[in-house]
Image (cartoon, rainbow, N blue to C red; front, side):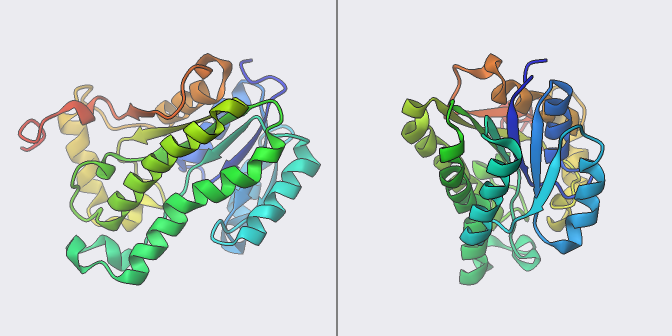
Length: 259
């Protein structure tokens, strides 16, 4: 029961295949009580159905592109949980048309949207959560190797993830004196609802399975357990890091990863 008595906020569950849901299941298994947010009414039924399976869990709506909704979500957290010990930020977005073709054709609006939702939202959410993290805590976000290497069709999301990883480091520096740790988990490609917006995701997963040193696709549960480690006391000395959960794929040189 690594998280017995701990309170957490989970942002980014869309359905049972979401990485955020795997993280939530791991945290619940270890005793955490959580508040979940869903982006809009379209996702409400999915999320509330899942939340009902966890003891003491609840849900609220929050579009992280709106600071007023973020503030309202934190009020819900204060009312339902009293404080926050950890926050899981597992979301990203870019218009679908930006994730096909060449990166050079990225539009100004598409670039701004991707950076706002995928990277700046971590700043906004963390800042709003700070007053509730009265005993310190842990913030974990999700990233991908496309932040540092070119992945066909990942395009502006790669730039957004690079910004997200830099954001992790700057937040870790700012919040360390408050005993709040900030880290990222870089997961291998997984067929989540959000990932389906990336052209060729199935080929990415197949390629990963064929060439990653562990010779298998990344599973949501593997990412969930790593995030659990980071939000638990076991990860108390780690902040500002990107931890890879990709079967070792990130260690490969370009020739080693090409068939």
